[in-house]
Every structure is written in structure tokens, then in C-alpha cells.
Length: 268
Image 1 (cartoon, rainbow, N blue to C red):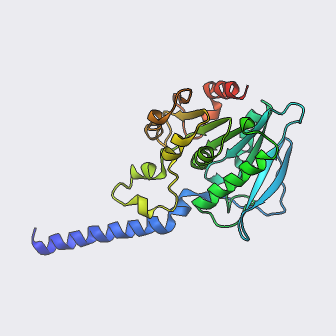
Image 2 (cartoon, one colour; image 1 turned 180 degrees about the horizontal axis):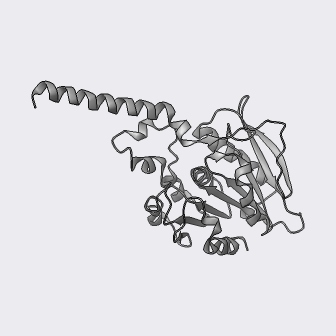
Image 3 (cartoon, one colour; image 1 turned 30 degrees about the vertical axis):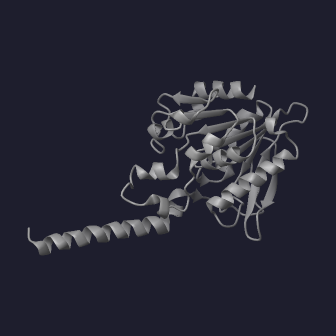
């Protein structure tokens, strides 16, 4: 193979590298988040008691919150629930029943562009929206009555909140060590620390959490690998738990008795 051909193939490889990198940079938000917006005046049809509220962040960004309630006389506390990257609160509402049946209110927040929430979807806005939700909860609940719960993409938001505010417990369902480590398994050839709009360094946040931490992860998770989540284990302090769900996938952990029993134990 002569030098001209070698130079030609090198140019093709570099062009492909640059093209894929450009597509990743431009479209990453659309690849990471899959929101489903609904009309502001629409009504949810949940088969459990709930109220709605809005947290204004600035002139254009507003977070919509659904509060799944329990009677005042039996209420133990509140779960601040940060959901995954799909659709809106309506897709995750069924998971509130586990907590309300244990006498905890559940406050689910939709991210900008999800459900009735509007505005700019940035990592900073997600952290600030979570903080405002916590401050709202503190008007009615002590930190010892507030549980922070993150599911999938929401585990990064939950970890950050629990690293800067006191709470009763941090629960993470199918978490990722960091967005860079997760995507780096496939895109290791790119400088992801510079390319990514959303970094969610949960590995750094979790080391600052003073509350007890419980992590749930399935061995057959095809979205966030079990090995990626296992990297948290060296960072866990005494009393924290990493709960392995054998044969569990990214979507079905709540159907396993082990997770149900462990949640009941935490909520008692």
C-alpha cells in the first residue's frame, strides 16, 4: 500500500471520527432525554390522591410537581422522587404506591420539557429545581423525615441533592457511576469530559452524602451495566447497602420481592 493510499484512509478515518463526534455533541440531549410534554391545563387520571404545584425557577423555567398524598394522621414523611429519562410523571406514578402504602407522601418532579414542566433543560437547572423541591419539603418536614429517591437518570440529581442537604435516606435505583464512565464504555475515543453537556458525577457526590445510602441494581441491566454501578461499592460507608437483584433488568427491579422487602424495611 503506497503512501497516497495510506494518507487517503487516514483522512477518511479522521473525517468519520470528526463527523461522529459532531453528531454526538449536537444531538446528545435528544439521545439522553426522551420527554413527553402535555398541555398545561390537562388533568392526570391517577387512581390515588394527589395535588399539583409549580416551582418557578426563572422567567422561562418552571418545574411541575405532583404530590401523592396520605392522610395527615398517618403520614411519616415524604419521598422526593427523581424519575428516569422517559415521558413524564404519568409514566412513573405507579411507583408512588409503594411509598404511600407505607405512609409516606411522594413528590414527583418533572424536568423541563417533561409533562407540564417548561424551560431550559440543563444540569444546573436540574440541580436547582431539586434544591427548590427540597426547600419546599422543609416547610412541612424535618430532614429526618425526607427520603431522596433517584431512578436511572434521576440518580445523578438525587445524589447531588443528598450531597448538599441532610435527609433520612438516599435510595438509588439503577444508578450510573458518572455519565462519562457510562458513555465511555462505548465512546472511549472521545474527550467526553469536554463534549458532554450532562456529566452527573454521582461518584463524587455520593462520597459527600452523610445519610444512609441504599443502591439497587440488576445483574441483567442492559442500559446501565451492573459493573458500572458496582464501582460505587468502594465509596460506600458503614451502614450503606448495595443490593444486587439477580436477573434484574433496567425496568423490572420493582417486581422483585427482594427490592420490595428492602424498601419496606427502610420505610418502617
